[in-house]
Length: 119
Image (tube, rainbow, N blue to C red):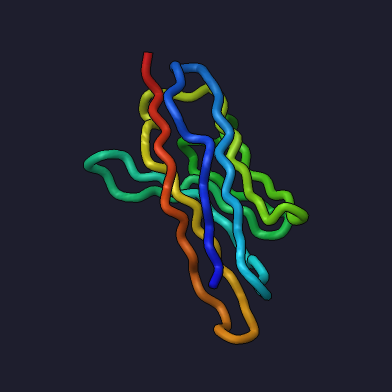
């Protein structure tokens, strides 16, 4: 079984920064892609950023402010968020497409971490 655990959320003032972490654990798995999603109250879930190997993609709303990166040795993906705005307030969740020899390819979600941007 593969699990994702996010951390790093919290309360930050507008213009501030936070770094989210997503740690994958389990046995015999390969992570194919990892993405960060967010969902604000009353809104649909939004894809924020994706990392596939060395390639990254971002939503237009976060380009130039957010950076997704990975540390393969730690099975961890990060989301560095700078110049935060009140509209960035949301629950941020990590999603991974994972391969195991036993189960093939499947998706895993973390439990989410709340980011609140407010003065």
